Length: 176
Ligand SMILES: [Zn+2]
Image 1: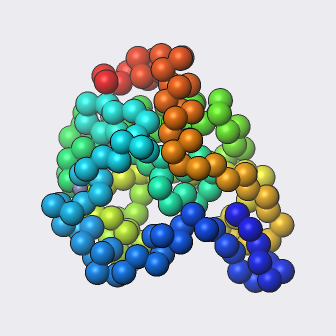
Image 2: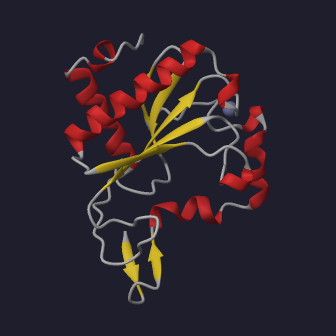
């Protein structure tokens, strides 16, 4: 991430594709037929469990930004079965464990956006696992930061390797 104009604006080039996408294309993400999360992106896929899967975010907010995505096209937490809820939390645990090994962040934001007003861009339930680093772009801080950027495809490959090598799917109770 680069700071331009003495901390007046932020430049995150990896988000440019998404930001410049025509709004009609973003609108289509509510439609199951055109939903990018219903068709998995094999390049970004890290782990496929029985009810959900883990992938690197194509448009990361920070280095190591992961997404946990339900396999069913639902957009409300209340629609999840107890097995889906359990698996989501197991995948959050596994994400933090493996990112701690690979990226060594100092904190995390975990969450999801439901509804346009909350910033939802794809109407298919997904949880963000956002690693945080000392001095990065906080919610109320835009200056004096230094983020190491990692290409999402490389992140996916490295995490797949860590998860496989340490047998983490089994350790975290995921049936893959
Ligand atoms: Zn979908």
